[in-house]
Image 1 (tube, rainbow, N blue to C red):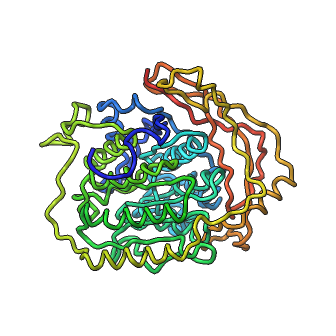
Image 2 (image 1 turned 60 degrees about the vertical axis):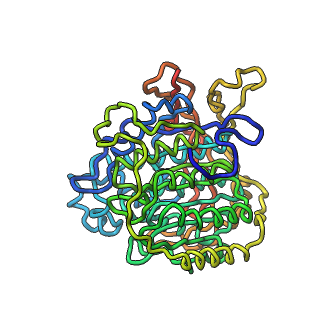
Length: 512
């Protein structure tokens, strides 16, 4: 693979292999937004087919995501919004006109068969990836995730549930600071808005700006209150190419990593910033897009890779296949192997495609000005902001085997021997945990049941364990692992019985 980054391709600084996991549900490609709609979940199945035929699945632990439950989704989203998504169907939507309008569902975000199951699946993969990073994996991948426009109380831009916010909240249980980077052509507005007033999450979005959906992401939008200077927006114009993009991406992200020092990174890899995208107007090659993945990987910080936009689906599959190889440190032949979707990639049947000769409207002066402005904003931050923790929500414990007694090349799941603590947290524990984290606040949406005190934080503390391991194309199932979501947030304190077991769990299948 070409270029970039500042570390070896496939090993950590101590020489050990990167532990990479990948989330995929074979049903995800069956969801259909409707005739003529540009968002096609089928692209996830195409990506998976490429990964299989390039032999990359053998190099990762592969997991079927646990469907996120109502209370998992309500860590960020409002109860009434999630209730609506759960209940609405194509047959009943005409009886819910007011709710459709209220929750912005119906046009860009249509009601389709299995809508809520689709949301549960892609959100479950992202949160499951965060759980794996919290328990020892180096890189987690969920190409079905990355739906960055969804708001607390409404759908937006083909996105219904904001899996990214839910995953970041999970990471915040273990890490004092989390960095979110967005290379989709559209501004990552839903994620920025959720963390606009906190210094525990920095959001950095590189996007087309100016008469373009969603219309937000001005360079002057920098965060508010404790979150001032923790939102960075990189507004770009049509036709940006690999060289111009990296002239901004590497110096800005390099400075962010130096100053912010995140414990984990979430990278949204929206492929609509590629050249030739059906809805896009950038001119990035697949190698140029993947250079961002390679650079983020080079810092050896736990990394969650998510999908996002991408509407020329043959190029989306190419891109995410190649970026999976980057995560694994694997080299891929450009000539594509035969597989069930081979005809999509004609007439060349290659992994890479050449960018176009479209005009790059981003002048060097404009790029220099943007870079200087954002680096100046970063210079106003204290290095590695201190966050005080008296007590944090406990994580599910995953006993590790004695690795000295194992084959160092053998892939294994450190979470497979999970034990569950069924003890109910005391009121005093809840109170002290709630008071310990004062920095995470979510911007207020206009909703009927909105909490009134935006400074107060409430922490849900639960322990649970799944019950039914599931297997797909596998000869070696393992024990299920947990997908607990106990994050600091201002949404609500869960009242359910923490001793109640979930209906299902994240489970893993491995290639032999």
